[in-house]
Image (cartoon, rainbow, N blue to C red; front, top):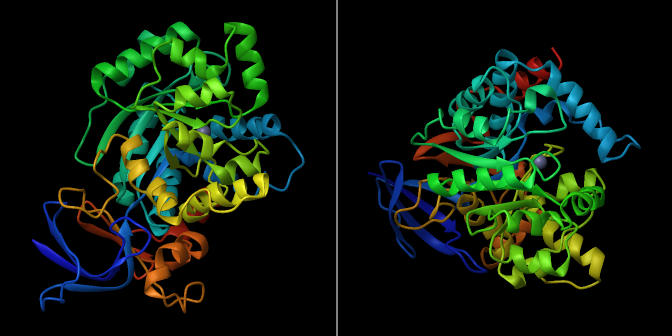
Length: 421
Ligand SMILES: [Zn+2]
């Protein structure tokens, strides 16, 4: 058993608790006590300690596009051509160091679990195994959301059919810090009958299931033409919309879509949705309908879950002229517990007995947050914090970041070496 004493810790709610003693045993939180004095054998953590952040939607390889596409005038569809060109160059040997450095950048940003939405298939599961190794070396928990991709895209993305997809994914096994999940790339890439097969596989395996849904109006139009329904209704008709289903983006929805997704989860990726001019998803209506929200860095335009979380509220303010639809605590919950649950780690993303020992300590004495009062710390971190304020990160009871540095990876050097050698 090891003990951490947190000057301030977020245990849920609008304000943090002071003097929180967290006991850790076997990679899990064994006990939590607020208002405790620091025992002499406990490690003292200044600042605000929060649960580890969950990046519920990532395409790790797209980190190599950062800065190369964002200033352009092209559309989502021209961006996609640049993404395909990059994807074509990657093999397991080159993908491993790119994914490892990207996951290590995530660790520095306080991310302790990643949902990698994986469609870069090549040589069976070789690319997926590179992702698994990369996450293990970076020290982060992984849910490999292996995507069924049957039409469009590149040859290497595609399985021969949903049955072939299931046979391939069935060869991958969960590990202590690894979950194998399922994904339907989109209704563009997977027909309704095949989507049903993937949904049934996920249900039979108790695996989380994700899909890109209604990111662009053109996707809705094509789906209406093919299926006579919106993407959400098409997926619901195929039986895949359930509490273990996460719709990614869910930007362009009808009222019926919102109602249906109220039974499921929605992952918003606002920095990518901004970058690609996708639009602003109806987060407030989705929450009112019952949907649990989470967030993802998606295209890695930036890796900053604080920005993703506050963007849910701030983008909506711009669109509606109304403030305060989402509290800081609800935004932080989306970035923590909401993501853990979406990725198949129920009970994670909380500082609570029995939860995985995944923790992030944020310094309140850096330039961005200096002057923060204890009672305002949750709001300050959500609305003004960033990766630069992340001091220490623990995943599964092990420190992966100390004093702002990764424990085993020189992250900037590895990113440079792998992206622009
Ligand atoms: Zn995506």
